[in-house]
Image (cartoon, rainbow, N blue to C red; front, side, top):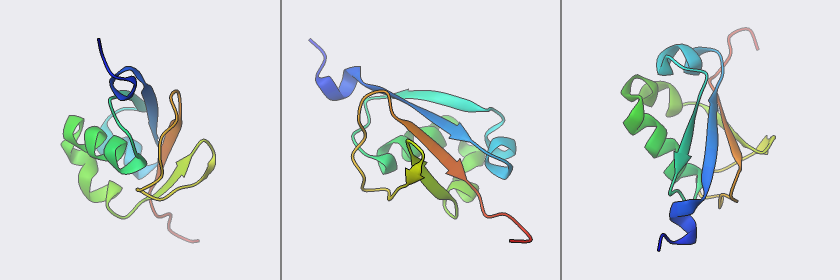
Length: 86
């Protein structure tokens, strides 16, 4: 029987340059315990995303997040690259 962590899924959404680097709007990732785990899984799936993800801000369910933040099932992680013109 799969563990709770293996069953939960999160959506990782990409914005602006992250979307261009990923070549997609979003991915559904499973088996991740933290925001960092989800980001690592997303960059493994979409290697072109890695350099952008390294400098991006992250949101977890609409709030600023750290890579160490725990993911609840059904969460949404958003990858926001730096924007020019500030």
